[in-house]
Image 1: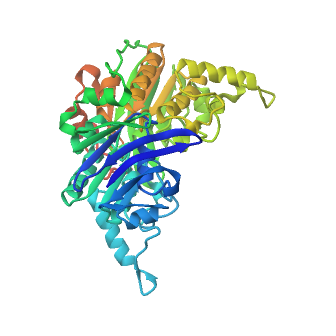
Image 2: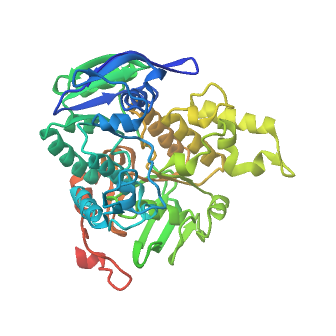
Image 3: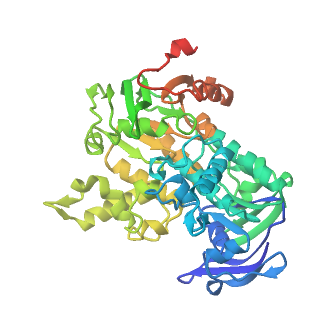
Length: 515
C-alpha cells in the first residue's frame, strides 16, 4: 500500500496536510504522533471510513489505484481495520459478533457448527478460554478488544490496521497479541499499528512514521531511531523526567479496606475480588497491578459503590464507608476516574463546562436551576489548573484530544473535593506528552494531601508513578511492594500465582498456603 499527498479537513480545519505513507508486504509499520496528530484520520482514509470524495491525494494497493466509498469495499480489497473505539454489539454473543455481516451458511441456513469451530480457533489464537456463546456484554474491555481483532483476522486480510490495539490489554495479553502479529507478518501480512506505548513500538515494528499536527515528520527504520529522538519527533521538543519526583506520604490512614469480597455479576459461584485488605495513607499513590481479569477494575468499582460487595468493610478517615452507591461514595469523599472515559466518564456531545460540574450540580445550581455564571467560573478554574487545551469551555468534549478528555474527567472528580481518588487506567489511549502532564497532575494531587489509588495494566507506569504497588491474581491479593523493592519480575510472579485456577466460594486457597 502507498499513499501520496493525503489531505483531509474537518469544518475547514486541516487534519492531514500532504501526508505520504507506504506499507510493505510482511512488515509491521508503526504510525506515531501525539493525540490529534492525524494518525487515526489517515488510517480511516486508507480503510474507506472516509469516502474517496472527502479527501485529497491518492493511494494504491498492489500498484493499482484504490478508491473506496465504504469499508466493505476496502475489505474486498484485503484491508481490515480495528478502530480505537470499540464497536462490539454488547447484546450479542462472541460468535455473533465475530460473524456479524459475514455469516457462514449452508443451503440458505446458518452453518452453526462451522461458525462455532472457527470461533473457537480464533479464541484459541489469543489464549482466550471463554465460551464463544458468551455475551460480549459480560466481557471486560480488554477481552472486547481481542474479539475486535479476531473479527478483523477472520476476514483474512492482506493489510491489517490496528489503532491502539493494546490500550485495553495488560502487558501479558499484549505479548500474546504480538506473538500472533509476528506469525501473521511471517505469512506476508502488512500491518500498521498505532500505539502510545513506546516500548511496544520497538518490540514489534520494522519501520516508524511520525505525524505531527497533520503533517509527516519522517519515516525511519525502527532500529535506527532511538526512543528519545522518536519522542522529540512526535512532540517537537525533548521530554525529560517522564515521572515526577514523589513527596513522602504521612502516616495517617485515609482509606482502610478489610476483607472485601465481591461476587462475579455473571457467575455467582466465583469471586472477582476475594478477601482483599489494604490501607492507603494520606498523600500516597498506591498502585494496583494484575493481568486482565485479576480484579483491578472490580476492586475500584466496589469501593465506589458501583459493584455490589458481599462481605467486607471500608473506612475513610476512620468513618465507616458503606460502599452502597456512587452517590454515597462521593458524599463520603471518594471519586472515580473510570477505565473507559468515553463510555462511562463523559457526555461526549456536551460541553466542557457541563462535564466538569456534572457530579457536583448542587454547587452550581439553586432551587433546581443551573447558575450558568457559577458553572462557567468553576469550569474555567479547572481548565487553567489542569491546563486543559480547549478553545472554549463551551466546546463539546468529543472535540478534545484523549489527554484533555481525561483531564476533564479528573476535573469533575476534583470538583467533588475527594479525599480518595480512584483512577482506573488513567493514561489509556494518551500520547507520551499528555501522559507526562497527567503524571504531574497525579503527583501534585498526592503532594497536596490527596490519597490516590491507581489501577493500571502497564507495569512501567506503576513502577514509575507509585509509592507502593499491590498485585492481584484472580481476585486475590498476592503481592505488595514498596517503591524501592518493585520490579517487573516480582510483580509478574505475583500476578500469575493462581493462574488458571478456578477460585470459587467453596475453594479459595489461602495466601499462606500458596507461599
